[in-house]
Image 1: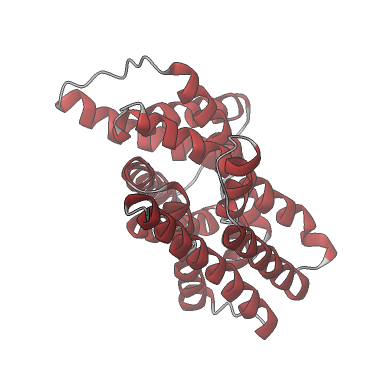
Image 2: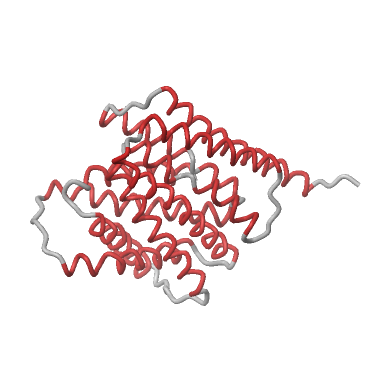
Length: 283
């Protein structure tokens, strides 16, 4: 998951670089199409089949993931990179709520405390860094968090059903390609020079590798522990933003980011504690 976080942060940098020349729908298309080519070529080389017996779970994962991806790209074009990524990675908070109220899995009080800390961090992050013109980007970022949580639940389900990571990512990439294809075919485009395509290639390549790492993490790891580690993307994105664009946040915003990361660490620590308690029950 840490490897996925670095790659997702790098993809965010590429989105930021490509957004002045490419529309969001174009980036969605190329994000999926490049990954589709890379993974498809690997599948052909190893003679692997994309046919699945779990189409419904793949559809839920692909629809939710595509909506989340589009919302994330819109947020990145409207907001500073670190702010957009932080809002997009509120997904562990929403994932905890979905586990408790949708799947009725037990979520203890420490997890709810982590949720409150996380939302407090969101408030601190939004207040000092957003003006009224940026609220659309903020809504897109939070929408990405909600839909990502739905997608991650289905990624977990597919892993439990034995689906390999490459097939899950291949079908998701196909869905994002189809989602962006109508706009790409139906719109007139300004020709791009070779240098403008470099960040687009980065979006597809980093996105494909990140999805493979993330899918494997949800397959082999515990759900909330894995989800909370995704908060490290915020740190990596902030570092990239500082190095490339000299973006810095006010003190309260850094406090908000810190609270969100603490919330993720708390969720991880408590989930591990619960796992040990279940493994070693006391009579």
